[in-house]
Length: 253
Image 1 (cartoon, rainbow, N blue to C red):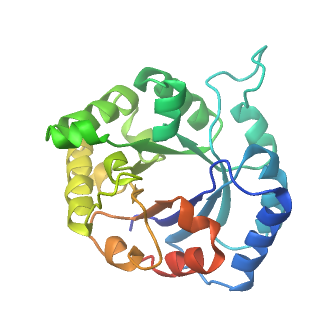
Image 2 (cartoon, rainbow, N blue to C red):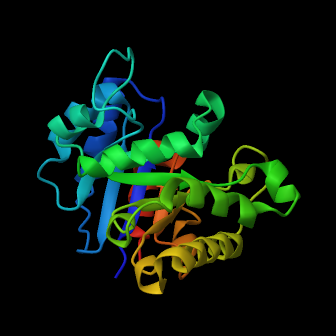
């Protein structure tokens, strides 16, 4: 069975005191996750060690970095390497988020390099893909996301591709006033799985977790997660509210 994952993306939010309090509140709920369920917290770089220590003895709860660089080390001021993350015991890293693509112009090729080094250091990438409003309006979203997967993922072996988690972000449904339905989420997730199956085989594609990243909230998580090809969510704003994210974690199938 594919892993079902509730992933929190805190982005550039919270002071360290508020970050620690949020983790304390979520941990106090004493959520019991099954073997196939995970809760992952992508926290800002300054909080990685604190968060890692706090979750160290909590079953199936993990910390993720929000980014990494494509090189092991070097004179690259302001960047963070996977070697650094590994030394902290970090197991996950978010790569290719729409904000990184838009604000920092990260290309599919550059993201492929980041994915390579993450796997080299046994860190699981959460690879983000998704289309903006202009692409959705032109009804070319299927081709757009297929190209993202092809240029960043298709060089991997069948074994390695199964070590990657994919997160689909309908960028057009975030902050635009438009809303993606659970049916639209399922439609795209099924397409992504077919793209993977066409290249790696159905057995491989059926073993890859695909998360939904379009304004998941406590009120809609259960319906979205119930879709057959949706394996959880990459959650932004709602992950900053303890009660909201607790409910989202409990909504995993």
